[in-house]
Length: 153
Image 1 (cartoon, helix red, strand yellow):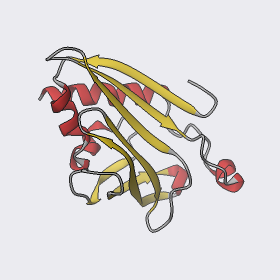
Image 2 (cartoon, helix red, strand yellow; image 1 turned 90 degrees about the vertical axis):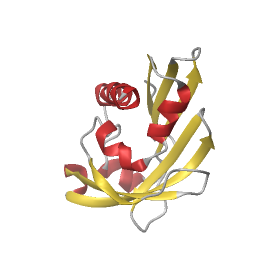
Image 3 (tube, one colour; image 1 turned 120 degrees about the vertical axis):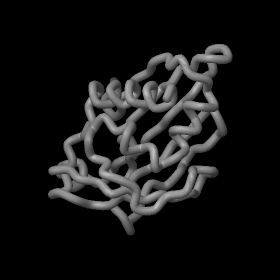
């Protein structure tokens, strides 16, 4: 964990293409979420390229209850990388990013590295309002456990 990001990683005993298939489908994200904030998909297609946007229904005390997020895809490389910046629906992303890096470990295992990075957040009011990290290292590790189960299933 650095001052502006948290990274967790683990090897999942599933081929890399199966892991990527789960991550690139926003409809699977609620079952992966170790933070408990994601309630469901508002609008989403499978992530296929940088520039795609998917909208999620969320709930959390940091936003006063229910809210929606637009997730702007910032990184995409099939079976290797997915990244997106999250913003309150209808606004531009303020700078935090979710990054998934995948490395095949042979035909039946994948090293998954998951990073929550808020280093690009510059809005001082937002930094006061949102106490980063909003999602803990334990919650991110829980997300990896949930991904392992979802990809194996």
